[in-house]
Length: 305
Ligand SMILES: Nc1ncc(C[C@H](C[SeH])C(=O)O)cc1Cl
Ligand SMILES: [Zn+2]
Ligand SMILES: [Zn+2]
Ligand SMILES: [Zn+2]
Image (cartoon, rainbow, N blue to C red):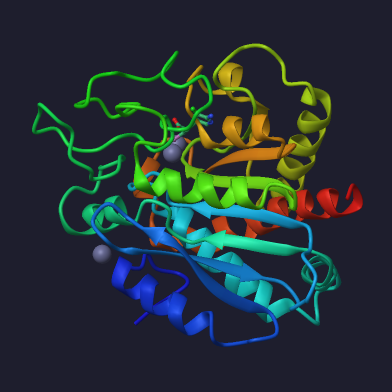
C-alpha cells in the first residue's frame, strides 16, 4: 500500500492520485494533460478552494529526472500536507483560498517506473532514438530555452541528450502546452530535483543575470533560511549557471522567459553521501523542511500578486 514515507512504485502513485483527487471535492481535482511515450496517463492535480473564476496559480512538478526519487515523494507529501492543514494552518488556508496550486506528482513516469524495475540510476525519458539502440532524452535539456547550446549533448547515448528538437519528448510537450495555455494566471513555477541542496533560479543557459535577479536571489535566500530553521540543513541559493553548471534547455529558464517570473529549481537532499539513493528514513525530514521553503515562496508570491 501507499506510504508518504516510502518511495512508492508508479502503480501505487497512480492509485494514490486517483484516491486523493476524489477525497475532497472542495479542495482538489484532477485533469489529464496527456500521456507519456509508453502510454501512461499524465494526471495534474489542482489544489485550491473551488471557484467559478480563474485564480492565480503556482505550478509544481516533481520527478522530471527518473532517479531523483525524493522529488516525487515531496510532491505527494505536499498534497497530503495541503489537504490536511487547510482550515488549521492559516498560511495554507490563505494560499488555497486565494490561489490554485497545480501539482504534477511524477513528470517522467516511464523513467520513474524503469528505475523501480530495471535501472535505478536511469535519468532520461524512455523514448526511441533513430539510428541507435540508446534510449531516452534528458527532459531537462529538451525545453526551448537556449536549446542545446551548452551543458547538453547531441549524442542520444548521453544522459544529457537534448533530443532531436526542443519539445521532442511528449512529456515535455504536454507540460509546456499546459503552461502556455495557462500562462496568464501561472505566477510561479517550481520544479523539484535532487541532489545537492540548492535553490536555483534563471539562468542556467547563460551567465547573464536575469532581469529580476536581485528579487529572485532574495526569495531564494529567504526560502533557504526558512528550510534551515527546522533542522539546520544548509542550502545554497543562486542562478543555475554559476551555482551548479551552465546548461541549456531547462524548464525553469523556459518558464521564466515565457513570463513566469518566480521560477525556481530545487535540488533536495543530500550533498553526496547517499546522493540519489537517499534512505527512506530521510523522506519525512526532507519533506518537512522543504515544505517550509515552498510555503515561503508561495507566501511571497501571494503578497506580490
Ligand atoms: N535550467 C536548469 N536548471 C537546473 C538544472 C540542474 C538539474 C540538476 Se539534476 C539538471 O541538471 O537538469 C539544469 C538546468 Cl538546464
Ligand atoms: Zn519499487
Ligand atoms: Zn534533476
Ligand atoms: Zn539533480
